[in-house]
Image 1 (cartoon, one colour):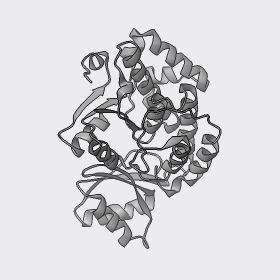
Image 2 (cartoon, rainbow, N blue to C red):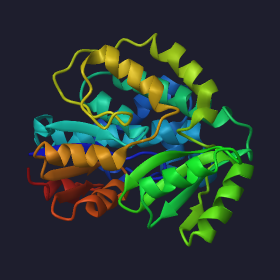
Image 3 (cartoon, helix red, strand yellow):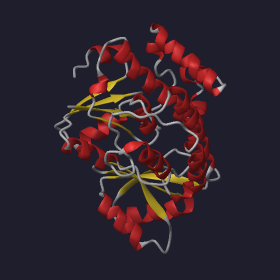
Image 4 (tube, one colour):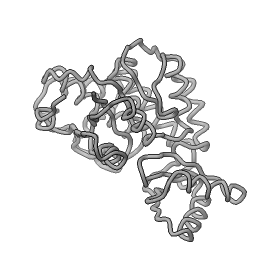
Length: 308
């Protein structure tokens, strides 16, 4: 039994998907459709860069989705791999949109457009330089929650991502994160400031929540029998109404990736297939459970070697 998982922001790289673009007309057509849909040359940005522009959140989100969607459908249509048999579809943050689109809940064009809006809204919720994220390594959620609670009168910070055993990401205002870093060092807890321009998945994203609430209400979600796992609850999503509500909550809430993977494993998933650029999620899954089988699909060779 397997689950299909889709990466989030941070997995992007200039040239991602080029092998597929050069060889398969289906992928070229998708790139062209994305350019027309967004009314700018996303394909050129993906294939040629510059990296600084690709790394802008409003560009990164639709770009990673495009590559994930292209690989998923290529594996199905050109290589006859029945990924529809997946017990669950799940993704990390923006990857949740890749999951729901590939699972048939939202059209390709609607997903591209909403991710462009989402990236722009998240980027602009907090003035540049006033918010950020810190990765905490080798600690536990319980320890970090305790530290945050003890210091809630001195500063505000939130756990944004519970990624795996020993990898937690915290969001907050830059000045608050500086205070937190000192406390973590006093407790001999290793931490690293991340090169991001906004504090994702925390209450500072309230403006983005409002924008996404308005935009998501305009979308036409389709019915599908495929099962999605929510970042917010780390459990199965029941119906399109709950899906829409959870996508709104996802903006300010913790990405419960570790719990999501554990939930799927407890439901007898023994194999995870990461579809999209990079191998970030494969590494996280391996840290959560060393016994499960993992495939990262980044190339034609990866697809040919995939056995389900």
